[in-house]
Length: 495
Ligand code: ADP
Ligand code: MG
Image (cartoon, rainbow, N blue to C red; front, top):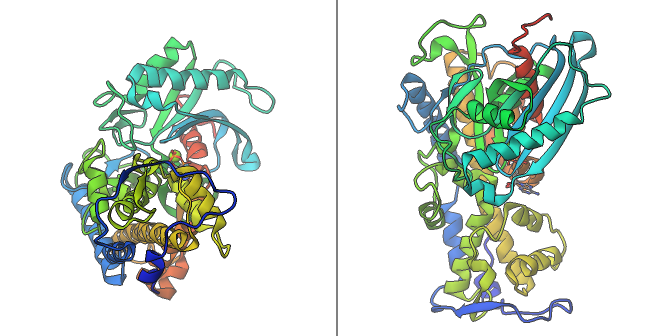
């Protein structure tokens, strides 16, 4: 399918104003020259972002290869393949009151769950969500953890109703911390680096559980972290509570990550005794994968100007934090080089991250003939009036970036499944296998979801892909972390 706008359409953009949009767009600098057309920029973009089957196949194979290299030795691959220390997954027998704290990228969530064992299951849950003030993303470690601990303390104060702590016990929480951590036990781990735009000073190299414990002490909150997990591991644990066939979990939100159930004897770098189950969850940290990705000049420029250049390349290609920004960069090039918005470049378009992934998603949902919603988003976000033809080109750019992201995410999933199947024939492809998905990008972007599913089906073929169920496990990571807090409770299990 070709989605290229015709050159004539592109040249005839300049501006038709709707009645609503009569104000003069805010513009700065004049464009440099008009030697290229927006159509040619679009065509090149589509070519550079193309993900035909051989590219997907190569990527899936490279993912499987890098997973093995990361399992063989620490530092052996782009993929860190971090051991989660989660060797026992929830069984459904868990009982009692448990908390979870989830620090993702844009928000943190607090949650409590009352578990009633096999008979009663999840009796009740309650959660609250707080967005992280942007200045805390660039502040000190103490400031960030104090903010989190105080949110948790306020939430704990409101406990009541169906939630009750067994007498004499300290409250226990799971801590979902979705940044790369070198886990040292189920309840401790050293932050390797911040990602997703965070640049908090003083946390890298420290145990994040200790940071949280100190902050909880400062807030006089009597609570103990009994499990440190990332969102992918939490999602896998949460989804497994309901469905025994869950083997992989993938997060597609602000950032991205994946984890899966691995046999301990397939982890050469693992020293020490094997768990009772003989398997464990491995956190791939696949956001740092980079092998053979179809990248464009826009990706390279965004990476070079990012706060973590040369890192998290897969994340920068497929995750929610970046898709809108890549589109903005393409539109800026079209504005500067091809007079997309007339003789001037709109001021707002010059601002990094001005166009967000929810904006490009909302534009792609516009099915109207004149693309009015696209027009009003372009007006609100970039401050420009637009013709229908211009709007079509914008949609083509959005679609190109979303399509590449979704298809590459799908190929990554197939890479993991292939690796697992290769090591244990029939384990994955021979029966129903569930991939639990969570994250705002996957949840809210239907086109992205469809591209992801298509890539998985193309790669696996119709027969095998019938066995692979990709299931949205909404907020599974929160419940999952609380369930792992239960599984790892210091009070042991009386269940
Ligand atoms: P986090 O990753 O921060 O834990 P979420 O899983 O809720 O949080 O994902 C939030 C991210 O999802 C946002 O940063 C954004 O990139 C993406 N997102 C949110 N809403 C939409 C939407 N309507 N369309 C596309 N992407 C969205
Ligand atoms: Mg999250």
